[in-house]
Length: 289
Image 1 (tube, rainbow, N blue to C red):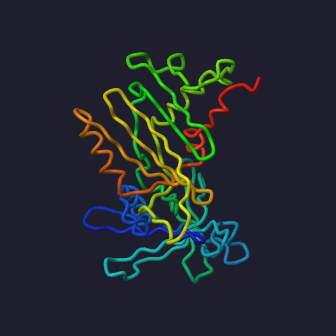
Image 2: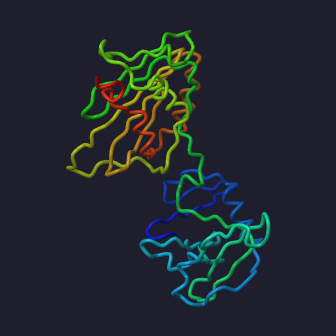
Image 3: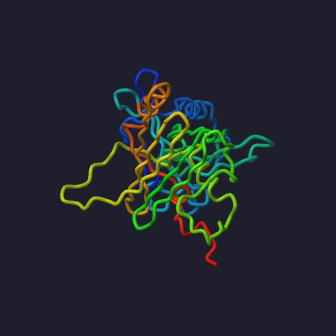
């Protein structure tokens, strides 16, 4: 836990998942690495006992609004607590060249310590999971379309068989008297689909009864052979939550089914910069003059 943010990892068999993210799978080696570092950590040196100085070591109360400290608890399969620790600032090179340490404090105690090893604890989902939603083989993408509320539809085409570069992308509907501000603008939009990653994840959330339906932005990219991947994005405050679906026939159907099996149960929060890269306003692409 850190402030109001919290993650609970749960082990079932040999697999780890995030309990408070609908059971989304965790990269188990990251959890095991944390456990190893905790098991191997040794008390090296006492530090301050003065609560007024805890903040310097990032060992203040983890429940505080702006706390940088993190509270870590480990429990057995019955929920019985095995260990609790407040984890603070890491201290690189504190123990000699190439040897870092971490400041820690036991809950309820004022004694603070520097321990061996760099213990990395984060409540950010993207630090624990495979963040890739899907990857596109850019050399085979022949069309990208995007449409966001309040702006014109954007469509970029490339003739199949031609190299995937700036010279072969065409923007549908570009005024004849306009020139692109940046010669790689269209290529950058297409390349945004090369690897689409997320910051957070959850089970899809249904709108509250009677609530207005949030406007949806839609992006589609199509590849040679007929693969089509659609991303539907809705805004929730400053967050952009996306769902993804894939469709294809023939030889590519198995690949589309594999993508759907991975992404269909989930809703993903896109980084703001990725959303803005994909849903570029057409009018921003060319010079005003």
